Amino acid sequence: MNRKTVYLSILAVVFLGVIAVAWMLVPKGPRRADIRFAGDTIRVGDRFASLVVVLRPPTFFGSRNTRSRYGVDLVLHDVTDVGRVDVVTLVEYGDEMKLRNDAKLLGWDGRRVWAYAHTLVGLDLKTKQRVGFEELSRANPSLAQFWVDEAKFYSVGGAVPKLRLKVADARQFELDPVTLTGTPYEDEKWAKAKSHEESMKQWAEYNEKMTMFGIGPGVYFWRGEKPGEGEWFGLMTREEAGNLKESGVPTGRAILNGKTSALWRVQAREGKRVGEVEYLDAGLLREEKAAKPLRLEGPAGYLVMHQSRLGQDGTLVVTRVDMEGKKLWEVNTGIGKLDQVLPDARYLGLVGEQPKVMISVHIVDGTMSQENFSLTPMK
Image (cartoon, rainbow, N blue to C red; front, top):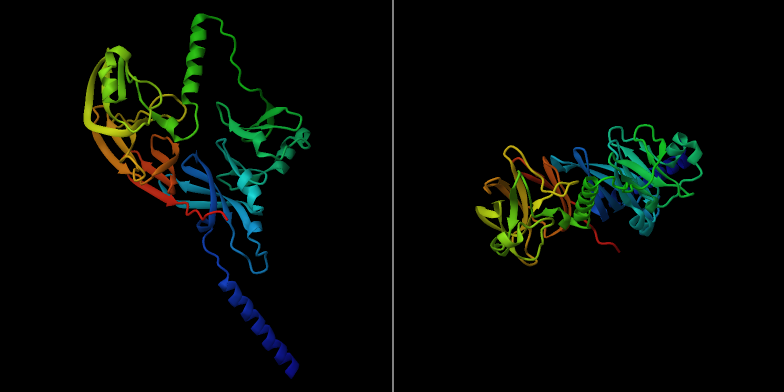
């Protein structure tokens, strides 16, 4: 071996060593530690799905420009232990502001989680297979030239949830979750009532929808319900209990105005207080798709969501009670400002804004698991 070969070999080894050391010095860290923005969370079967915008670690040969290193991940939390997560990358790299403004979790059709993250993407939770405009075009050749690349034209809805979309000529379609073929649909309209009874039924359905309508977690704090004919169970303030014969029982959404309320059972406007506890800013957990509290079984009862105390130090507390108002368990979630409520008869999902945390509460015994989103401030 001549001197030139030896010299080149030494240079090659030194060069590779420099690369290795530089690569080790590049900060990698877990993706979830670099979350810059967390969007909505939805329930998808036995998991919670959260869409997050993250800052990717720099690569040795890649761009060091922070703005071009943003991506979008779908974080899947196991409802039994939200600390067990599966992170799926939807967008590897993209522009920071575009992703932050456009990233949107659309919903779940029973098979795929649909999101808009730089473009439309559907993720099959079992196979992790993705579909987008290319796959939709193969399933719907006549629509291939009509897709609109904007988040506002896509949603998941209907009695049986499906992806709904509006194409470039304003036609509307909903996609079959299995075949991905589109079927035209029109926005739901009220049919003209043919009788007084039908008209009253329609009015009751409309009133129920309007009662549930709203933005924010407050829509899941409910006053009470009628568990049987002529009977009412729920929360009343002392003032409401005193005016029971004149005003009747309170209905609809609980008013969170810094007052305490207790559990009551009412029959024929005769009230009986059950349980000894008064709850601050309280409501019974509402069902997800009905204007009434979620009735639990084994034993029968409800979940009371309330505050530990007034002021900035107050946190959300969840208490399970039976039909006699007896406390079965209670857990302080530590959430100061609530962002989302995801009702369920097995695991209650809660998303905190302060702190930014995902929580799952086991309805049977009140055990709680949590996962911090570890938000890093946007620059």
